[in-house]
Image 1 (cartoon, rainbow, N blue to C red):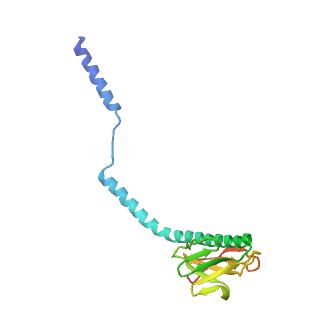
Image 2: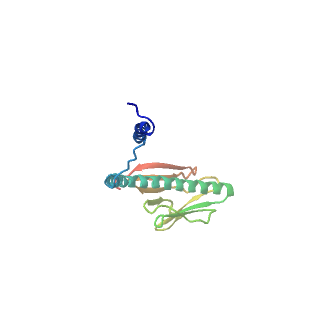
Image 3: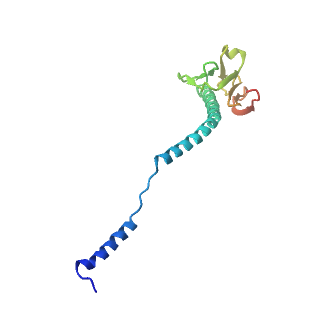
Length: 175
């Protein structure tokens, strides 16, 4: 017996609907428990990584501060040579500040860095403040700025004869 009319098209319609249902993408999400587990794992990982960045940040500040000091010293030397008059770099190791001739601005260094200044007695102003003087011929009174942080020591040396400024490292076993 052959089905005709409406009865014949019903099985084909059900087959088409079943085929469409099987082709639809299945949408799945994350459960609340799964999200909380992922957040807890991320929190544990961040908790272990963040403390290890502390020394790296302090070291980066130390390197940056030593480059800033060297740059200020080079500027001061250039200022003396161009103007044909003495120029001063003044460092306050207590307040972590410095000034350079020709600029009214007071520059600050990070407070986490221990500072030291070795200069001549004639350029020592008080307990925490001293200067390095540059002369028009490029020479200087000479000295050394010491910066200590993160168990490392960086030194900025000023050659008295040539006025050359160099940055170097020293091992600091005490800190």
